[in-house]
Amino acid sequence: MADFFTKGAARNIYYGGSVFFILVFLGLTLNTVQQLPKRDHRENITESVEKGKLLWEENNCIGCHTLLGEGAYFAPELGNVFYRRGGGDSASFHAFLQGWMAAQPIPVEGRRKMPQFNLSEEQVKNLADFLEWTAKVNTEKWPPNIEG
Amino acid sequence: MKFASQSVAKPYFMFALALFAGQILFGLIMGLQYVVGDFLFPAIPFNVARMVHTNLLIVWLLFGFMGAAYYLIPEEADTELYSPKLAWILFWVFAAAGTLTILGYLLVPYAGLAHMTGNDLLPTMGREFLEQPTITKIGIVVVALGFLFNIGMTVLKGRKTVINTILITGLIGLAVMFLFSFYNPSNLILDKYFWWWVVHLWVEGVWELIMGSILAFVLIKTTGVDREVIEKWLYVIIGMALITGILGTGHHYYWIGAPEYWQWVGSIFSAFEPLPFFAMTLFAFNMVNRRRREHPNRAAMLWAMGTGVMAFLGAGVWGFLHTLAPVNYYTHGTQITAAHGHMAFYGAYAMIVLTIISYAMPQLRGQGEATSRKAQVVEMWGFWLMTISMVFITLFLTGAGILQVWLQRLPESSAALNFMAAQDQVAIFYWLREITGVVFLIGLICYFTSFAIKGKDDSAEQNA
Ligand code: HEM
Ligand code: HEM
Ligand SMILES: [Fe+2]
Image (cartoon, rainbow over all chains, first blue to last red; front, side, top):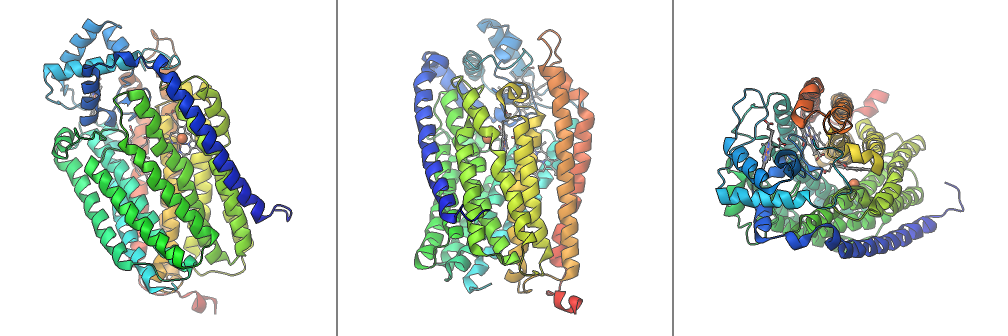
């Protein structure tokens, strides 16, 4: 590097640049947090949705599935499973999920396996409520189609 | 080695390498489960193997970073480590906590582990990479504080160089960002938003400071290039890293409920994130070309140049591939992400740890500046086998990912294949990935074998 570009100049760019962009990032974060209520319909986070999220975490569903595209890539996306398997209707989705959770693991040789979690009917209802709430977040039209 | 207290780095490096081996074994288990779905089921379900694989990765890298700090901070500060005893105590605490956590994953159903460790009191478990029980997370924070205190006191009583200042900045950043793992609101969107403050601001932020300073240290030592020149490069690299990487976080905010403007902010800034990685490649090659001495440790130089190239490919090229919002719309959460995650983690962070180990181990083991020529040749076989395997693993996963997008994401809802059907279509790529993974394991065994080959630096005799 040329001589006029000194170590001091490089250091100043590092300090100045970092501080500046940290501040911009904090500003954008503040703005995001203010805008989120319009996008995440948090008014619908019921006690059941909260319990569903905890069950989702304590059974490590994310270890096989993606949720809004984040997680593991071994099993189907579940951010929109409410539409894919429930057709966007609460009652049918609840019925589907009760059946699905009870049927695991599906005994097909060589096929990828989802474990049996031995959840109660109430717990599966919580999970369904959580997944329904998630499906209704404004995600800028992601995923591209119903298959997730 | 200038100071006796640097030797505490050795157990850290050895434990890191043992965990690395464990990581690869569980990678191979998962790789097989991808195509033989009931392999080891229900003894080790996929999600359990995945937690073990990724957590071992993170923990061995942390052991590697700590070992690197215990080795290079006294040397840079030109004084003994503040407390070698504390470093030993923390080693055992961290090793025990890590081992217990992994055993917990393997022996207890995850929900049981959550209840045993009181997750309901402060729920932090069950999120990708942050699966550790809350108590383990608290343990990590305690170990990190003790560690930072120890190296901080060492620098305070010694010489403050650019390298040790930047290394400590990076390590403090690592600890501070980890605190966000304790924030887990019941609103999934907020949870996701701040989850990235740990994951992205680690690998595309503060860890780059750690990587840059370790690389700079090894290059100063092996090439003898003037410190002033190296330090200027280091500032340029980390300046670019933070200027692009902080707002680059936006590339994770496109589709998780955050406002639309992140598509612009994330795309524009992350498009420049390859720059610091490219600069690291130039840095390594330039310094080696301008070297003022012939260091006998050729293997360490190979690792140093290799990490430059592979980090640029994995993070820079494969990152850029899917970082623009219109592309990411289709590739988000597919095998393309897995391809990038593998090459980036290996090329940047696994390889920088292997670089410092390669440089420091001969000295820690009393073999002089380098191991024997024969041991270095075997180590370099390990380098090439692992690195080339990782290139092919990445290519196969990219192939799988492109097809997955083509079959499952691009068509209209009525014409698209469902997830499981698309996975069946790309199975051949998973088989190829698994076979290549076995070659990676062979490379790792070669690498370990090189440590068993006795003998000191014999380059002088060879050249005579
Ligand atoms: C050599 C054999 C290896 C095999 C067969 C393997 C296999 C796998 C598999 C199947 C997954 C889970 C993907 C999913 O969620 O569906 C995974 C995840 C991961 N592995 Fe490996 N792996 C190997 C080596 C490595 C190495 C050497 C590294 C890094 C140094 C690594 C880093 C990761 C990371 C970071 C993830 C999480 C990826 C993400 O979330 O996108 N793996 N691996
Ligand atoms: C050494 C540095 C890097 C490492 C270790 C790394 C690692 C990873 C990992 C493990 C993931 C998957 C996270 C998950 O499980 O959800 C990921 C995602 C991603 N990375 Fe990186 N990365 C690095 C640098 C970069 C760079 C420089 C770029 C951009 C140029 C980039 C762009 C992305 C994008 C866009 C995603 C999201 C993929 C998706 O939508 O599924 N990464 N990275
Ligand atoms: Fe990122």
